Length: 315
Image 1: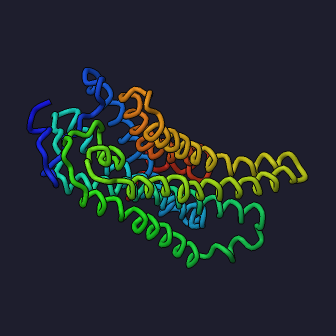
Image 2: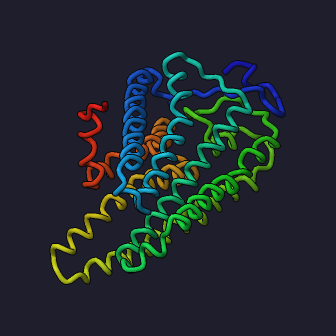
Image 3: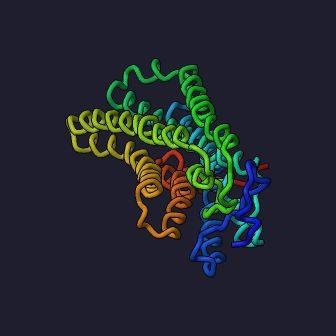
C-alpha cells in the first residue's frame, strides 16, 4: 500500500473503491453478471410502470404500491451500478469524498424506502383479504398518497445522520474502501475517531426500524394466512393464496440477503472478505431484478399485457 494511502488527513479528497478484493481476475465476468441484472431490472421495472400507467383496470392500491417499488428499485440500482461498472471496465476506482457520502446516503435512503413500501404492500394485502368490503374506502387515493409520502420522508429523514456524521469524523488510516460502492459501515471502518454514535445508530436502524418493518409484515401475513385457510372452498383458498405469493416472494428476496449481509458485516469476522462483498452487492442488485419478474409472472393482469407491449403496432 502506497504512503499516499496512509497519510494522515481529516477529510480525504477522495476514496478508492477496490471492487471485490481477492477476485480481481474475475472482475470482468462478475461485471457482466451485474450488468445483466441491472439491464433486467431497468427493463422489467419500466415495463411494470408502463403497463400500470396504460391499463386503467390496474389503477388500484396494489399496483400503485408496486409502481412505488419499481421506481425505488430503479433508483437504488442506478445509485450503485454505473460507478461499479466504471470500476470493473475502466479501472476508475477513485470517487470524490462528497460523491461517496452522497452515494452512501442515497443507497441507504432507497433501502429504507423499499422496506417501507413492502410494509405498505403487506397492509394493502391484509385489508384486501381480511376486510375486503372496506378495502376501497380505507385505501383511497388520498390515503395511498399519504402513505407514499410518509415512506419517502421516513427514508429521507432517518438516513440523514449517516453522511452528516461521516463528514465530521477524522480519517487517518486509509482512503481505500474494500467494496464496490460506499457502504456505510465500510466508511465507518476507515475512521480513527469515536464512532460509537454512528455504530449504535446503525444498529438502531437495522434492528429497530427495519426490524419493526419485518415484525409488522409478519403479523400482517399471520392474519392473512389465518383468513386464507378459513376460506370455505379449496378454489377460493388457492386463488387468494396465489394473490399473496408474489408479495411473499418479494419480501423474502429483499429481507433475507439484507439481513444476512448486515449480520456478517458486524459479527461475521471469519467470513472471507470477497464473499461478504459479493453478498453486499447481491442484496442491492437481486431484488430490483427479481421484483418485476415475480410480479410479472405471478400477476395475470401484468403478464397478460407484456406480449402486447412488444407486438402492438401503434398508429
